[in-house]
Amino acid sequence: MQDQAVIIRQVSKSYGNTRALRDISFQVGKGELFGLIGPDGAGKTSLFRILTTLLLPDQGSVTIEGYDVVKQYRKIRNLAGYMPGRFSLYQDLSVEENLKFFATIFGTTIKENYHLIRDIYVQIEPFKDRLAGKLSGGMKQKLALCCCLVHKPAILVLDEPTTGVDAISRKEFWEMLGRLKAEGITILVSTPYMDEASLCDRIALIEKGSIMAIDRPENISGSFSKPIWAVRSREMYPLLIDLRQYPGVEKVYLFGQYIHLTLGNEGQEPGRMKKFLEDKGHEEVEIKVITPGIEDSFIELMSQQKRHE
Image 1 (tube, helix red, strand yellow):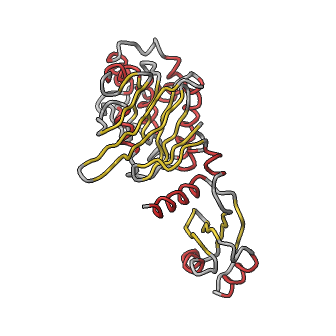
Image 2 (spheres, rainbow, N blue to C red; image 1 turned 90 degrees about the horizontal axis):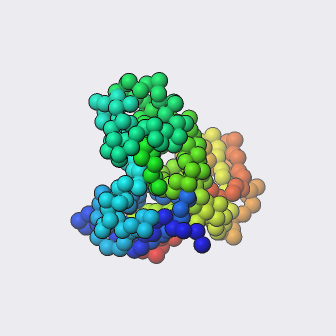
Image 3 (cartoon, rainbow, N blue to C red; image 1 turned 180 degrees about the vertical axis):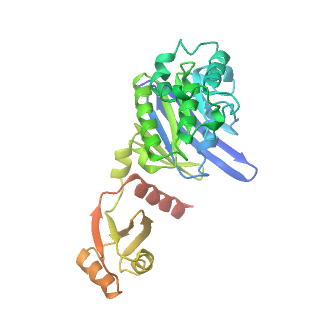
């Protein structure tokens, strides 16, 4: 069995009457790239702050590399690198000054662990004298990651690192994570972007402080119980309204340029659906059966959770 870098047992956290985390339990193997996937307010940041010793759990326990996050928090702060969702470096220091500062805090130098940050730092080195506050979103993200890595952490905890950056920077960032994983670093990353989930070894889907599923991305997508129909026409909003009235429909929701729906045993013929929509006045109707994605599975699990509440 693979050694576990992170062990979380029945962790709960509340803020007043609001329960942010509800009996969270899972493990992350050493060298694993593990994703925590969920919308804003799902509890991702609260869990990551507990993992990085910035927040105490109300109940439950967490160990990282065998150290307890409450009793041995100093050990964890030396072996973990944490990148919060909001840019938190010194904006009135330059790129190079920020990096030197964080290296000094951990009793090391940029040169000592330069091999870890080299691929990232060469992209921001031309701007090493620029104030951090004057960098673009993508450059700030790369600088923050360099500062997380400069002390050669055993584990990286990244809270929504690609939120608010452009598509190219998002792609580059995940390529960097792949290279860091190859170095043996354990990575926990949270994201609201379902397309990023497929880039992880395993993912946990979280909603309202509860874990709904934990598995490999392809297994979560493959567990969807029914085929998904993708439909579009010239006028999407009237299409959504009319599909809600289609015989046998179970779920209907907008999904990018299409409307996704699931059907019962009734109404499974695309020709019948197309005629139904054309009779309603829809033009350029396109209907196809598709493979469910992680976001479809997330919506399905949310529906199941609501039925059990």
